[in-house]
Length: 111
Image 1 (tube, one colour):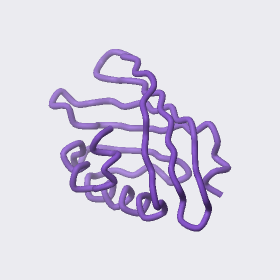
Image 2 (tube, one colour):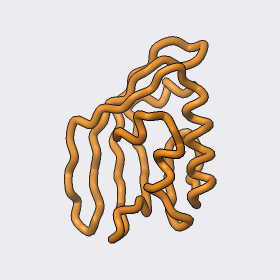
Image 3 (spheres, rainbow, N blue to C red):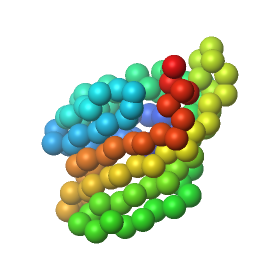
């Protein structure tokens, strides 16, 4: 979370490979390190401030985890933002993210 909260994609590079896939609605699923980092750059540009706070982490086995998180910040030209997120993450044996999928409580925040 420290790397994500930095809003610096250079800090996120170490977490992804060309085999990584993420799905962050309302975007479509994205695969490959360079495309994932481009998506994060695009997301970060939409916010004056954005941060995540993990409240719970559940081990699902086989290097898969369920994160319960709150995101908050300020969207450019749209005011404050807050949302509850559930994230499923699968890590490789080397600790890289193989798959990440977010589920948002309030999808109206993206309209």
